[in-house]
Each structure stands twice: as structure tokens, then as C-alpha cells.
Length: 418
Image (cartoon, rainbow, N blue to C red; front, side, top):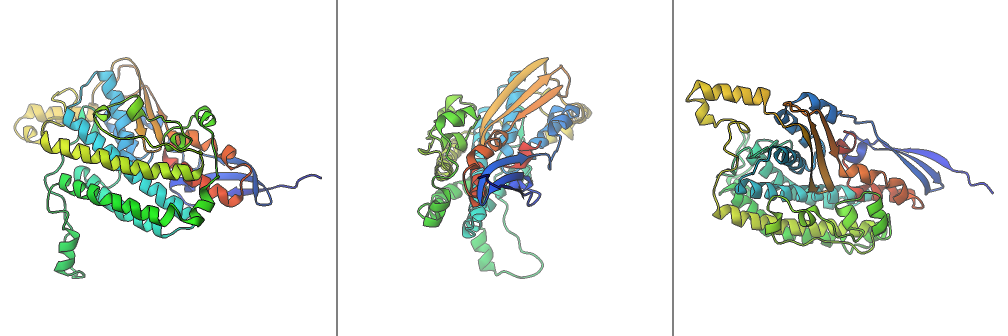
């Protein structure tokens, strides 16, 4: 007897995150026989556009790739440029970068956790996760002036040092809150940015406990995740998995440990791995990674408190003049305009640099012909490799499980459909 299947268009749902995904599903009743992911609905031509931009002008494109892991994208890009130029970044800038990389990892995992739970039907976790995300977005805003697209990292360091004062909530013209409310809202904003981040690291483990209370032993959550989308360690490596998708299958691979960059070799942290390679294990890995990131941030805070210093290389070739110098002479003003309009030239050659992005290995390949713009640029986005496994992970599962599998892959289309 022939099995009659039917075809279903699954998405696109909305113009952001994994909502731009179009899946063509072949179903036998509610069982998935085949899943064909289609990309192209968010084509941004990032790699092509960067060929006509100087290296400094190309930096903000990084934030707009995976717009949940902004500074980690920037990190890979500036590291590739620094490797080609042979630049040694000041130590304080390295610690600041690592601290913000881990803040970004927590930001990413909170979004992943909240949206995954929401996709599966749990509303409360999303609101809890965004409560903590707001504080970390304030940290982004404090150093860069932007809550999302920071453009904070620079070839040679970071844009500026950490501010001494944390911005506070201000009263509006309409009196809607009492003075008591404002004192409560600003109680952890009385000091510097480092004080604010330290306060966050103290209370964040309790917040993670709250997420786990809601989900980890919740029988509905486990019924939806345990045994779903199982990928063996061998198959995970064959499919090009990285990050929590690879570690969830039990493969202990983390670039921060295996190929340390910046100051990760100086820091104490563990690499969580899963046992069964299912959606539940990948959830547990992300929860554990948030705890480890919190530990790394605490270590960076202690070092940064005790070690002042420069956060940008002192080179007129690769860094703009200080604002105070611009006002003192015409030569510095000309240098300022020349730096931002023309930028700097990379030597002829090629380079690849990768970081342990929250979603996996994020790499930047630059091919230079000696100009002040890249001749070619190629982005290695972790989500692209994960998306190709969607058919294999969902075949034989129910239609409702497809939502869980998309959630566990933590895909953001800005980097996939670049």
C-alpha cells in the first residue's frame, strides 16, 4: 500500500531571528518524512558590501549578522585584521573584550532559552530571561552608546575605557513614579560600570536557578525535549557542528580551551558537555555555560579593578587621535579625517580568525590585495552548518517536534542568509 504524503509550508513567520526560515515539510499524517529548509528571504549581501568599505567602515556590519551576539562577531573580525597587521593589543583591552564576550554569551543564551521555551509553549521563562537581558543591554549602552549594534571593538583594542559612572534612570516630565521607586531602580547604579556588572554576577546565579525551577524538571518541558533531535558525536562532527550543538552531543571542543585567544588561557572555567545529544542536553549545556560565563566575568572584573592602563594601541597609523589632541592642532584634525575616510591598508595575503561564539565557531576569512578595503571576505557562520542538519534531526519526529528542533539549533538568520 502506497503511503500518501502531503506537503506543508512551515513559515516564514516574522521578519526576525528564526522567523525568516521557510521549511517545506513532507508529512505522513503528523510525522515528518522530509524537511527542506529554504534560505534567501533575508539576503543582505554583507560579504559583497564589505568589499566597498574600508576595514573600519566594515566593522558595524558584524553587529548586524547575528544580532543577538554582536560583540562576539566584532571580535572575530578585529582579530583577523590584527593577525594580518601583527598588532599586539593592550592587556586591559583583552580583558575588556573577554568580559564583553561572556556578557554577550549570556545575552545570547537568555534569548535562546526564552524564545525556545516560548516556541514550545512556556510563556513565563521568556519574561524572566528578558529581565536579566535588560541589565546587560544597559552595559552595552554604557560603553558604546548603543544597546544592540555597539561597534565597540576596534583593530588594536576597544573604542574607549569602561565608564566611571553607570547611567541612571531619570524622572520624566510626567510624574508616574515616586522617589522611592527611583531609589530602588538606581540602587545598583550608584557606582561605576564595573560595580554594576559585579552586582549582576552576584545575583545572576539565583536567576539561573529560577529558570531551572521553571524548566529543568518540568515534566512537560522534558516530554517535549528528551529524546528529540538526537545527534551522535560522530555525526555531529561530520555535519560541522560547533558550540552547544557539538558539546550537547558529548564532544568536548571549545576554541577558548583548545585554541585559546586573548586571555582565556589565564582564566578558570569548565566546558560543559552533554551525554545523549538530544534537545534536552543542549538546553542543559546552555544553562551550564551561563554559569561558567558568570565565573569568567567575575575574574575579569577583579583583574580590571586592579590593573589600569591603555585600551588602544598607541599608533597614529591604526588608531585615531584623541579628541583632546584634535582641538590642539590642524595636523591631528587632518589625521582624524584621513583615518576615518581612508582607513589603513592591510598587506597582501589572506587570514582566517575564529572565536568561540555563543552559537559555535564564528570565523572571518579576509583576502587582501594590499588596499584599504578587503578584496574578498568570507564569514563562517555557525548557524549555517546547523541548519543543514534540520532534515536529519527532524525526520521521523512529529510536526510539533520541528518547533523544538528549530529552537534548540538557536539559529539567527542574519548570519545564515548574509
